[in-house]
Length: 386
Image (cartoon, rainbow, N blue to C red; front, top):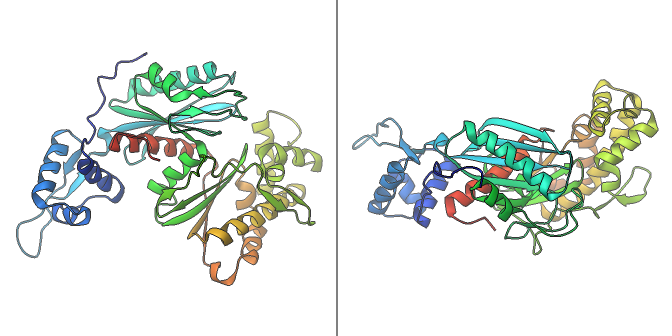
């Protein structure tokens, strides 16, 4: 353990207190009478819970709100920055971290390259970044980790192909020992979905599908505000998801839309800058060329966009969500391809034409914030979400 945990904020405690705190975190300020009604609590119970949460520094009272009849009400809200969480996104080449408030507002971000990808090196890098953030931000209540691979309920990572981990790694246990803080670990697409559902682009939708194209390809679903992880926690890990190219060939979407495939296709087509530099620089060159209107790059974007549109239409047709969210490092290929949205709509039935399509940023902030939401949920309820 490299740092004392004496600055840990007090957790809400009882399930009822947790319900009050979570509702205010997600829904904003409420008057006590309204909060009691929404949560099905008696007024004396709500009064007692509010007093305890106020005394622990988790809530604050807002200025009086005049009422048509009776005494003015004092709305309750969370003391947002009293509790802070660290979210971590681990990629094949770097670790990205963000310290956020309990409402997901980013306060500081740090990143570091991974010079080695073995578990010891990854854990050392995560620990170093978390300790650096912790030295500047008091009352860190927990750490959430998102990475590519299957993760069980105990935070053990099964063999992770992107990192080259061949055996199970007890990541949660090892990081809790190193940091002296509660640590929660999730597959990165599941963590991203949690963040989108709580505070991100998905919060206004009861159901949505997220498709990300980057180092890998993932499809995640949220229904009724609940992230669907699957019976074996592998929902969304879609390396075998198939699609159809513009010339009618059946292929794996991964083989068309992941970063390596995009970079190689860009090199073969002569896209400026796609043949030299680091993988990150070569991918950025392709994205820049698409945005600049380079014909070869635009043709490549059309190929990727068609393949993603076919797969997306199939997923939407089965699940019928309110929204489709598109993200990942290569999302610019879809966002900047004028034909993508048209192709997608042409493949959807008439009754699904009103599905909302939104594009996420192509950085890692949403991914790290999603991991922080996992930590926030553990802080609120005392257990990792299932």
